[in-house]
Amino acid sequence: MKTSIHDIKILDIPIVKERRGNLAVIEKEVIPFEIKRVYYLFDVPSKSKRGGHAHKALSQFLIALSGSFDVVLKDGEDVVVETLNDPSKGLLILPGIWRELENFSSGAVCLVVASDVYFEADYIRDFITFKKWKSTS
Ligand code: TYD
Image 1 (cartoon, rainbow, N blue to C red):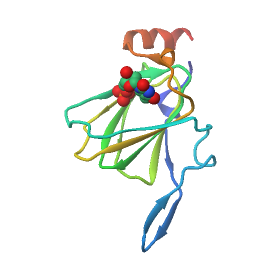
Image 2 (image 1 turned 60 degrees about the vertical axis):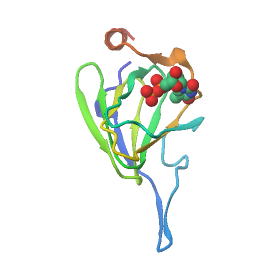
Image 3 (image 1 turned 45 degrees about the vertical axis):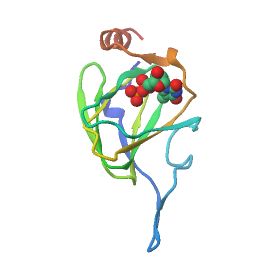
C-alpha cells in the first residue's frame, strides 16, 4: 500500500455562519468517498489512547466536534502529529496509515465519517504486521 503521511490532508468543511450560530455541512463535495458510516468518540479519559491500528481499505474523515485531541499518523517510515481542535476542519486519513488518538481534552468529541461499514478484517492492529504489510502490498 503506497499511501504515505504526505497524503493526509486537513480539509475545510463549509460553514453557514449566522448570528444565530454556525452550521457545518459535510456533503460529497467535501470528502473524496461515499459516506457509509458515522460514529463518534466521547467521554474519553484524558490519559486514554484510541486507535492504534491501520485500515487496509477504509478511508476516514475525523473532526473534533468539541474540544481537542492529537492524531499521531505513521506510514511505517515517517510520523506526523495533527492536533484537531476546530469543528470547521477535518482530517482525511486514507487507507494504509497507522493512527493513534491521544491527549483528549475534557469534553472532546471525535466524529468519524467512514467510507464503509464496520469490518474487523479491514483492521491491522499490530504495528510490526502493519510495517510488513506496507512493504509487501
Ligand atoms: P476501534 O475501531 O478499535 O476503536 P478506536 O479506533 O476508537 O480505538 O473499535 C473499538 C471497539 O468497538 C471494537 O471492539 C470494535 C467496536 N466497533 C464496532 O462495533 N463498530 C464500529 O463501527 C467501530 C468503529 C468499532
